[in-house]
Every structure is written in C-alpha cells, then in structure tokens.
Length: 125
Image 1 (cartoon, rainbow, N blue to C red):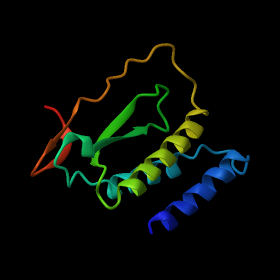
Image 2 (image 1 turned 45 degrees about the vertical axis):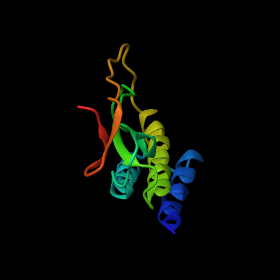
Image 3 (image 1 turned 135 degrees about the horizontal axis):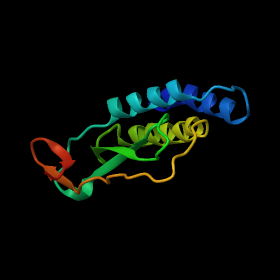
C-alpha cells in the first residue's frame, strides 16, 4: 500500500549507487527522513514490547551520531516507517561518503523506551 511511495526513492538510491550522480544525496536522505517521521506513530501500545525506535543518520555530519524516534510496532504504517528509515540511513551513508571524517566523535545513545496508555511509545524521562 505505501510501498509505491518508496519506489521512487529506491530508484534514486540505485541510480546514485551506480554512479548516476556526482552529488551527495542529501535532499533524498532528508526527504526519506521526513517520510519516515510522517509514517511513524507513537500509538497504539499497551506494553513496551510493542514499541520500537527509528534511527536516522545525518547525511552531512562527519560523525555518525543518530537521532532517534520512538514508534509503535503495531501501528498500521509501522513497516512503511521502518522501510523509509532504512532508506534514509542508506542515503545518508552515501552522502556522508563525501564528508571528511573527524578523528573522535562523542555520541549520546537513546534513552529506554516506555509505553504510556495515553501518549503511546516514548523515551523514558
């Protein structure tokens, strides 16, 4: 159902991977992130086992620190959100190949997931 939304981005990723462009796919990575965020839903959940976390990588930063978004694994759009996040990570990796890496990065990982009956999946406070 939502797979048709992912096909143009997949085609772009393959074009870039095959040498079809000499520009980093920053805009495509950002578009995939926006799509994944739009598809991710924090509700419903009744237990923390129904919660997952999407990870997004920066397409422009030299450090590979991610940003995190909790989402419901049982929401109707959960698989599409996960697929869009995976595409974003792929495209961000391609874009970062144009960036000179730094020596040491300091990244903060996500907090633990929780499930609240009213607000859904979220990070612990």
